[in-house]
Length: 456
Image (cartoon, rainbow, N blue to C red):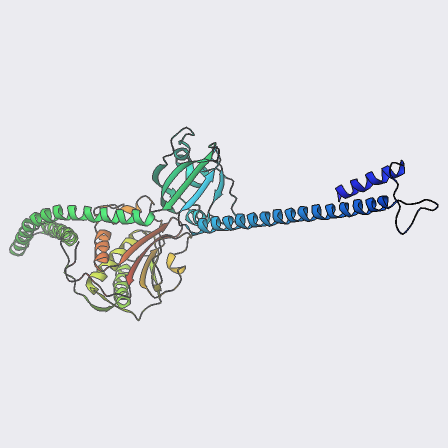
């Protein structure tokens, strides 16, 4: 169009200045002869101008259409690439974080938010230390910009925003743009709490095996002379005429020797392989029998501890050793009572669970929050005491570990071993505001597999 207008304008200017004379066939110039060559020239000039304009317009239109089509195609490819990136980041189970050079977050994927218990509305732009603490933040930022491309790998316990502690494995790399300029850090992390707990359990089993072998030998050597001492004292007591003071001394010897013999029996129970008597058992009924015995003992001691029950799964039978199971319930209940010297509530609950709860983020007992299921029968024993130090929880089932004055540290170790012999799981949750909860899980879909030749 621009070229056509320019050509047409040139013709008009030349006509005005008399350089060319052009007349239109529908409006001839009066009193003047019109040469044929002029008319032909005008027609040819106008026709050439029109065809040139049409060709250029068509060419430019085609180029514009192709350009628009290419831009649309590139936009679609970019949108597909963006969608693919989002799908990849949403699909991976590992947390992914990018930061600027100063350690301020610029991006965190959904898996990272889930691991750290962050809300979706939480702002991204925050320092690393707000998520992982000062120590881990310093370790991440120790990777200097001049360092080689090998990532820094380390692992550490971390407190989440809900105050629960998790074990994370980190891989930290430099984040660079296409020109190679340092832009910040790329942090990939995984929640390995479950594997760490399995590692601790294996370590505890190894400790149990070592301590058990040693303790069994010592207990055996103590048991024989202890029996001889007790028998001799009983014989003397029956043959001698003892006054009040001597009688008290003999009673003291017998009482302490009995306590020492009970300790030896506990050590032997922990050390030697159990011979389980597996029968089909109503677990809830066994639990309630232990409750009745404990309630009588508390009543005789005039204790201020009340026992509350919430039984919601009382029709399920399991293949277990009922006597061993009673020992577990008794040990855990006594542990709860010892945590409430001034009184409180001991809560016994049973329910069906879909999965094993790994954490409890509220002050309520965990069994009150769990969704129902049909995979596990769970027995929860809660107290309203002062709770347990979080650092002590991993050591609770270690033999001879006890925070109680005069405690031997064997009750929970024996309970843990018995539960594992029944292919069960025991979890501990503690909160200073609400006390401690032990949850014992029994699988419903499979009978006990290890009762033929159980291992310690």
